[in-house]
Length: 366
Image (tube, rainbow, N blue to C red; front, side):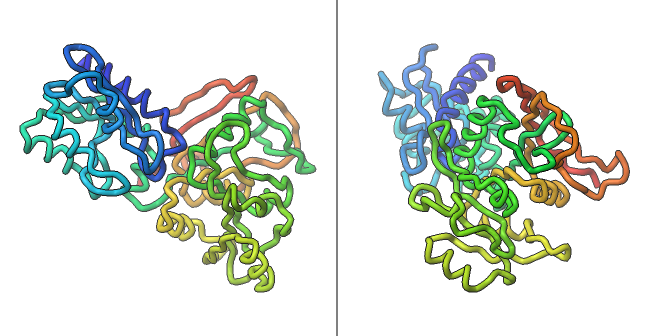
């Protein structure tokens, strides 16, 4: 088991090289070992290209027959943009296949294991399972619920402000934190902000400080308040924009936005007069959006937390105090400390002089 964990860790390290390029597919790594030597390894580098198993097979320096094949995720059994990986494994007759975790995709879901076992190939499932599942947490949620994985991310001062009283916020965080934020953007299918953020900051919301793909840019704008000159509405050939609005939007502006190539999505409103985020995330999932990074502003962050829609929280804390200012999280309707939102799997690390808190949001007990 000790050797099994070593090689699955190696496969996990390889899998992470595909971060930001494999969605809607998962990140997967594969290592082939024979007589205690790695004879081939690979990872899924980009959606539409060879899967990890095939890349590992093609890089093998000798025959695979009888070797141990280590994969972070169960091999696929269906035709998509590439043929089933399990067929390739069976063809090369490994002696044993060690798998980190089962694939939650209903088209696979244990079938890959069953096919290997039917051919008399020994299988072992569940080596470093928690780590393998965590690597693809977005994929697992999307496959099991049809909903995108929701990450809340914002930068704040020590006293919890995301801007001064005048709305000024550039820059709370360090250059290292800003590069981290751009890596996050590239690792998500979409990035979402409220219209207030666009009106105040006029952000571009693209990936510029690191190499990576641009996510779909989503703006919540129930009345289409943002100007047509906003930077987020430009360069649609490089980064697409979707505006989520309501029936209260001006018809004339709707047409002008359509003419600019902006995707428009009409959403329902809650009794509080806000865009129904539960319905919105369901619609985004139906469109194939498997992960959403929410970058603000305060009202959007508050709504997502209040409705219990977030999966992960990422807070960059800068060693600064501004006093009166705009708070990161507003009224959640909490009156007792026992009602406070709690977290698990906490991690702290430094980004320059900033601190990053990464935590999963705990599901309240009933």
